[in-house]
Amino acid sequence: MIDPHAIVSPRAELAADVTVGPFSLIGPDVRIGSGTVVGPHVVLNGPTTIGAGNKIHQFASLGDAPQDKKYAGEPTRLEIGDRNVFRESCTVNRGTLHDQGVTRIGDDNLFMAYSHVAHDCTIGSNTVFANCASLGGHVEIGDWVILGGLTAVHQFCKVGAHAFLAGGAIVTRDVPPYVMVAGNPSAPHAVNSEGLKRRGYTEEQVRAIRQAYRLVYRCDLRLSEALERLEPSAVERPEVRLFLDFIRGSTRSIIR
Image (cartoon, rainbow, N blue to C red; front, top):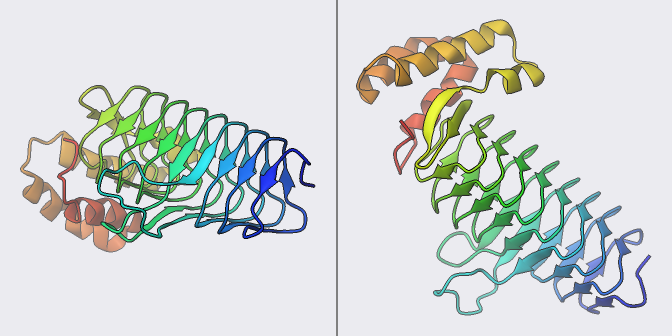
């Protein structure tokens, strides 16, 4: 399953059914789970753990050192879950000791060509990074987030679950769950209602989320006033609680 033109370190650990294409380089301290396919001309550096059923296409570079001037060669990690797809020329860097020392990626994500995940980022599951979508360091991306092509997210920003970032969006503040943003600088436009319906949210749930969105973004209230008015709904509705708690936990302030 390993092409004779590939170079695999004796210190790498590959499951018996891993496929490695020609001219790929797998360095020491790389662990790859069952059923993962590594295409040609891929570079994997460690310490990196890659789960099962992943597909890594040509010219991708995963687990290399962080692009951070403060990094001095300390042992940091990249952890990747299961069934992710990394298309051509994706780059994902390990963490730094200025954070938790690890970059984490969940399951079932699609990273299209030339997308970039910087050091110390945390990516949930079922996300889509369109072509050339890029994250600065220490960014957190929730589950089911979609990043359009050429999207850029500033370091330390957080993007909540089910958010939608339109192509070319420049994100410099936190994006709450469910919110669609676009532009440079990014501005909120609506609730990602179509995405929510596709994921099984009921009409009642979507209506509650829209009402929460209107309170924060359309009622000309101070943020503290809007959040206070949301509290009774959040007690009964978990989807509103997610929205409310994210905003209260924001450290960079939210897009508004």
